[in-house]
Image (cartoon, rainbow, N blue to C red; front, side):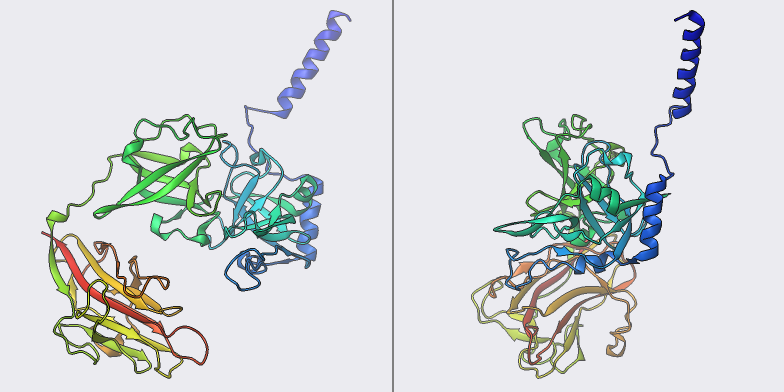
Length: 485
């Protein structure tokens, strides 16, 4: 081959290379191939869009209603329906494996689902923020792990002693059923605290502020080299006199596994998921770029700096009638049964002979009972920080409910209780499965985000219908307000 011909070939090759990639731009292409675009247009023309919640409701994890999941059967979708969502996860750093999480909106999502697929390096095709249309026809909706409450879209189910789970979509199913549009949106993280995260948020991209890694993790890395698959690292945020905690889980395949954990306080953005056994919620990073913890670590409050500015043990109140003394208000919104002061006879804490506040709907002969017990007013401007604390107990509460609420616009009259603005407080309330003689502490509930004159309310919701278990009893005692000296 002569030198001139060699030169021509070199020029042609260099032009071809520079035509494929310019300016080192390796981003995911926004345009679709003809085949994918036609499949998407056909889907939109022939199928009906349904909501994520509609799709989730097709799956029943306990069809026999016996309280376990060994009868779970993934639901096969036969109708021509699809969901539209936005990719919230990315496997670019190797922290996700053969899975996609999608949420129903790029901002302020209300629902999310998981897609399990037999394909790696999905970020090349399904980049974070990509709008996707999932053709559900012929696929299954269930769980990748029975009992996890992680709603998952997959292929032919497998069955074992724990019930049925969905398997991964193969290459052809991915191409036919998970269709991209040319749109990619910025995923705005949903701002939550640790205590606000529930099953509803699994699969969503969230942000938690004022967070740091636990004190004993200084000098460690995201991944523990003695682990095989995943490492759990404890996150914490100051909540008054103690910490709220959560788990960050990092895969052994992540590219940032050897990075040092930051030692400051700040913000983390991640996808909500669950541990392999589905026992606990976790956060999973798309990238360490979503961790910004360079501020000063938070400091817990000192109980010695606080005084009790109000307390109520209900002793001395007239028993057997509606509570109306010491500034308390009881109000029966629906039905005639109301909060009463009663003397305990059990041997539990607070102990026999003590007077407590009690409300139950048993024998009320009313389908619905709604009763309010409202505290005396609290001046939240008199000190910089306040906490409320109480104890609660129950007797066969079953499906009846106790809400703990706060209002800064109630005028103190029973006529306006239902029309005032009431906000739920993050109190720990006794559960239905707790022994009836046991008393549960609410924890110290921070009121510093409120101002003005406030009232704390205990709202009972139950009834005594011909069927249903909503006639249980709730009890309150040892209510107190702590204020900073």
